[in-house]
Length: 65
Image (cartoon, rainbow, N blue to C red):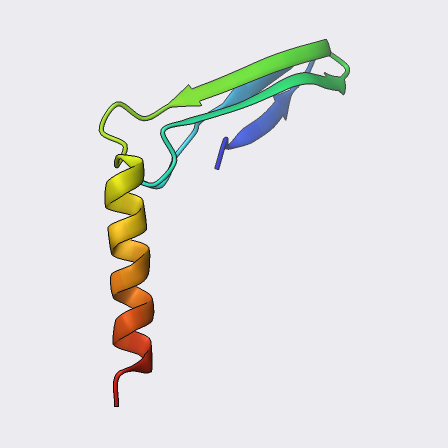
């Protein structure tokens, strides 16, 4: 999800977050670059209410005959 890629003495990131995750961060990633922090944020992330509604709707549909 964070698209981490070591590039020599640095760490690059090309994050792609699903709509259900608004913020994802890793801190202190060790490597040739020392320790790196990577944070990704999705501006149009779903609210917790939307995530819960979608989750319950999917489960309900799965158990319908």
